[in-house]
Image (cartoon, rainbow, N blue to C red):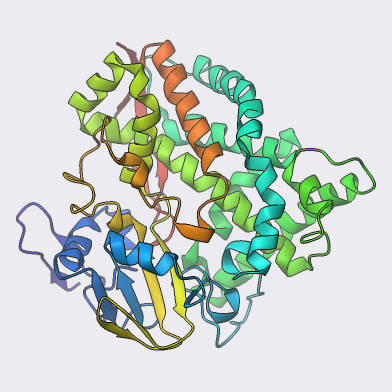
Length: 423
């Protein structure tokens, strides 16, 4: 395996054996090994805009600093999210449908006006009044989960806390059968994986999972037909003009969006709370001494973790970004994971600082018309978790390094061994 080292003694990264460009930051091992920091720092130091001609998924522009990402996100007519030109991940290819692949459009991968109509349809499920309505249930579920955990014994935080809490909230949002709720996590893991397009066998397996999910939700959809509208997402879509007549592909695409979006941000930020604060004990002590810092800490954890590493846009015309000439059809990858470490916006960005003044400026939820519609639900779940841990004076103490997701899209954890202790 070829090796390339950045000129920093404490910060090296490995280049994969098939990497044609050492700054192709789509390589999954960078995320498994948590060594993505160095190449992104090099990209930011060089100006933050880099054309990777020999990327693993084809040529693309890497945008790795804060201001150019905001610029691109603010111009959806020039920088399209549409699935018809490539969609929202670096892996999207509008030129061909691979064997074993079926197009599944989702509203985040649409441009106005279709995007606006479908987003407006689901938005009522995430209004401030709905968040207030969800809070009591979130507190009860979180209390139940925490009170069932052993004190002083090692367990997997991802499985027992992060997955359990986010899966329960997803089931509530969809009014999904409670006894089958863990399928939601399994479907999210499989269908949010950009690496699942690598081989025909991978694509066939992914497609089978998508149809399994679609079948379950179709049954739920049918059960709600001719029934009064209820606040859950399926009923809201069913009773709308914009989404009531979706074809099978669009139906599955929007389910994937809502499930992956509802799962990954919260689940992986919950694990960042257990893993990250242990790395900065002074900041953890500051939070433990002052629970009023919890809301800001939640924003800081979401920034520090950046649960979705990137989003992709495609140029609809010749244009330029900070003097770089962009051609119509160029693939533009917005690396939120790097912009959230941009020192010009977030000083000492590699640290968790629980009282960071501008923590809410993070880009983990995106920016502009595609900003995460469920951001308030994610924040609610995290705030409740931290509040309930504080009420019990509980601290999660990692007992080893986390096992990380090997992908350049979901920046997540597979497992994290911890013990709980009182403080």
